[in-house]
Image (cartoon, rainbow, N blue to C red; front, top):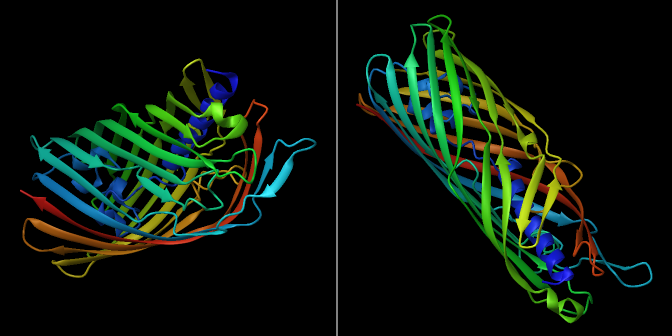
Length: 436
């Protein structure tokens, strides 16, 4: 493989796989793992009991009186827009380079796809102290799509990320005051990412690049505890470890013409990425016979994305990242109207981990505030029906990214991407809990 082919393959593989990590990190974490939790903006799950709280705390099922099965589904509808504010492309034309506007469609409406998020959990009583649990979740699933003529095309066209997390749990009631739990998480990840590539002449059509990456089952762990300080007050704490992933991908580059024609390539690449750790602390306080107050704070270790290591035939690359750890806070309440109906509400603030300088069109993210209401209907002695509606307001943010295409070759071309991002989302959730 020539120097230009090697550099091009490395650059495309690195850009695509970096985007995959950003897609999983930059607030594309899906916290919709409990319909009951959605109704109070996830403010009380780490301190609540039952199978529906297993994602947040493996101790939540200790000392169960009955077996429990939970199933839920969340419909996520996103309204987003990404506008060009003067993005440019500088080609290596002597002397000094030729800078032109990127051009194309300057407004990208609705690039973030709607989606459906299912989840399942079960808790099974062994005796009055010991319980076993199983939870299946999709914590990092997302898709963004731009048209082939979008101003974002050299940075992003399609970005699809899918994960499946299967978590087994053992929980034990030490005494009336203390519950403990531990779990092992198996997580599978795959991704598909595409973008356009500029030819050296603005008069020539674009080339294209794509990556399809498929991971193996990789493993992490989680621990948790609940302290029942009084009959009215429960304090919960949990920690979920980071998971190191290795994606096997195929990089395809086509449509390059003229001096770049020899750089069309079909090669394999491997990237190592890490999903973040999560530490949760919260409480539930039963203020009176009807009202329960909830609060939680979560520290998320997005800083695990310190670097991404990519290897491919004849070489490799390391990309340093600038993600930052974030702190999410939430408050909420449960109000028992009567023995059949409980109402909920909550607010959550969730800051973005993406840097202001370096934000990409693949991850058009900003700080978000979530407002939620929900309810539980006791349909029978053993069946509870949960429902929730959440509205997520995204703070306006900016895409501000400079990168070099064909880096390290005479064809090095500089992309300066500048844009404005706005959006909001509505999540409709429904689920059932069955005890037996």
